[in-house]
Image 1 (cartoon, rainbow, N blue to C red):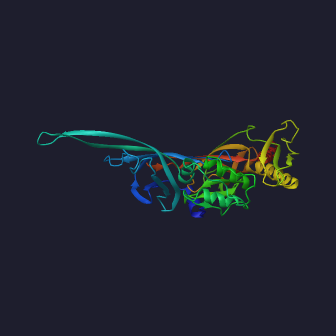
Image 2 (image 1 turned 120 degrees about the vertical axis):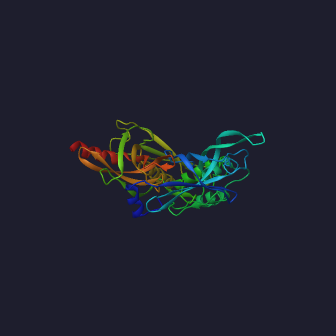
Image 3 (image 1 turned 60 degrees about the horizontal axis):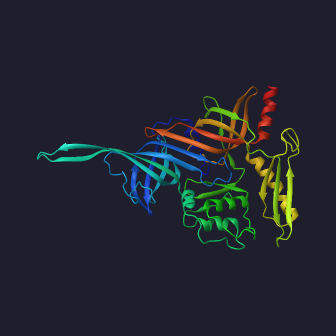
Length: 394
């Protein structure tokens, strides 16, 4: 949540009267339709996979009262041929505005009605009775990068991961590395890009131990795998924002040993290292079993590969493994990979659960943004064990 404002946090707790989503259509750097009337919307972000590059998708229903917006060709304002929709949320009470980025139109479906009337001279004319256009949209920079696959390019020898990421996205958007982990040189053995530009970006993120998201300004933000924050406290009660919190505990994405591999610089000697979880209910070799995860290291020494295995297991644990389904008041500036603190009701009182947002869903109806939203918040097993211990004791 790059936008941080106590006023906005307080705004979330207040009334939604007059709140609006605004939409402007752009094509080729020019505004082609302004002040679009959004009658319904559904926006979702899915970052449940740490290597997910494409996260934000949605649908917008745009009112078309005179039939002038209904597209026929690829170059029309609300068609798929390169038009973008710029979204923003604006508070009805304070006027605070939160940009929600630029979104690419992937498909559009007009719904039209027609009226027939007779002229005084007896000629029958058909005119538009208005209708609507349903748009399927995706976050622009990642959607465009996915469409424009890599053709005839290769990694620059000796370049760093962030430098190459910026080069791969130069024609499609900017990269914000303000919060990124330390940059790393791409391994000499990595000499070929995959055809998918999204996969290539995913490879570079993995080399950095990072994840990404699209910011309100439309840039691709590179951030640590464990997330950013805490940025917001979600608490129950009359003055709070928590509506409901449910949990499902399962073994998906839970590991107790990390294996990292690479080879020496000349490629002659393979290097393998492992790091083990040695304590707690998920300890390696205990009741949970022996559950490995695998990683390609950048280091070309045995000590370096061992350090990679240790760091990768720690990063995986810190990123969280158990997902909470949270319903709360809608905060327009909250992003995936933000860290939030949930004050969860338990037998021992309200206890803090700190986790990373990996999913967000926000809708509107009748043109009014919903006052509530749904989040998926991923927490570590260590966090839940601490809560479990206190809850058992009461």
